[in-house]
Length: 243
Length: 113
Image (cartoon, rainbow over all chains, first blue to last red; front, side):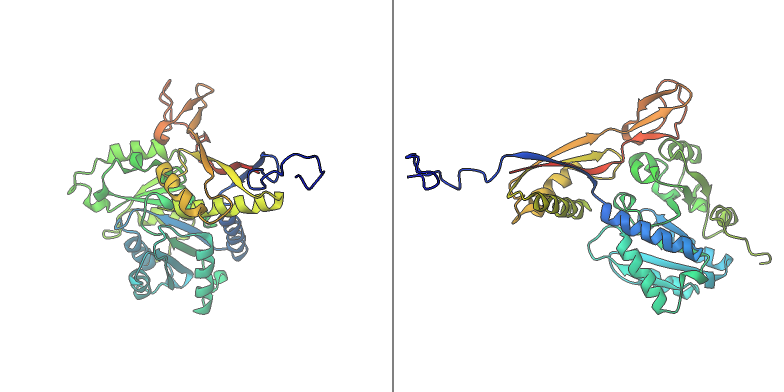
């Protein structure tokens, strides 16, 4: 017998009856809201310290670290620092340190991208090395080599730089459009190899224009130095007066 | 392959909202995923039961609303679809600098009991 009201009906099976009526909860929340909040906090810190933060993205092996080594030769390396992400090894940080640039390596394990919290950790580790944001002109966040996943994560940067090397082929922007869409600046790297690998420059520029319509595009070579002065200018940095 | 960590974010947000509502079970989770959000839908579907296992969302249905990329052409003063993120207007060929939609990544709603 029903115990609630003594109505004489069999007692309902509690497992068969939902505790409450089905209902819809409208949320409309960004999936990356936690990362976005972390990125907003970083952006404020970078702005307060007067440092330009660049998120450098590309596929593996397209020349991110070589480009930074070449920049270090042209800039005051004490006003530059790098936070570099890779799945494993600290090879890149050691290369940059050898070039005189303060660098910390974030090893992400299986994670295919950097997140704002990892960059905050990198800034913290730079501090431990005696490098404060205030003394820097440029902080480069060298992302994990990957043309897909890192594009979704805001790292608090003021400039997003996507690098496409001539050896990858001129159609990569069309194949990996989402990451190019967020770019402020696209660099075609290893331009010294363009002829050797049959790189179609006009096709590359046309492809970039279709998927990165906001971006400025520069051709550079870390090896020959071509385009590096234009890059330094595009980064909003002062060129050294005498070299 | 960041879809599993995205799905973990979905789970955390969904569980928090269901908890705040006093729900005992989540039956449907609805997402919006932009074509240019850099997310593979199949990988997201694959990650869903893995992320939800052992929670009140285990066994829930995943609904994904795909958001197509769309640009606005200033020359034609009209929107146009931008499949694969290509922003050249199919009418006049001008390249649009105005992406109207296609990058969203959002938890839209839950159905709970």
